[in-house]
Length: 159
Image (cartoon, rainbow, N blue to C red):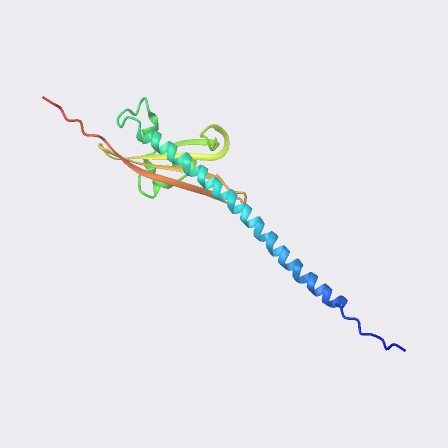
């Protein structure tokens, strides 16, 4: 007679515990993947918003300093925002100039809002802040801003 051999292997409980551990790891990996995708999207939005702000700032810098009638973009429309803190506001009532619903190229049809505030600090100086804002997928308002100071160039008369 052959004595019964002891079979080696895994019990049902051991298999279930192993599957549970693998499932917890996969769920953690899936949650991390979703976070990575969301943050990549946010990063892309910040990059596009930064480019929009820099483009507008360069456009404003290249406008004539004193010609506010033809180039109203450099006009200080709202004196209520003339402070360092007020320059960075984005609410419609507090901004000097606003472009709503622009895309990453500065054309209409996107979800960015580009605002800029001008502060006539002195006859020879203007402070400018360009703010690009958008609503994130989570519902919060995100923004990026750039500021600069424009100085009137001194024109020397030659005799």
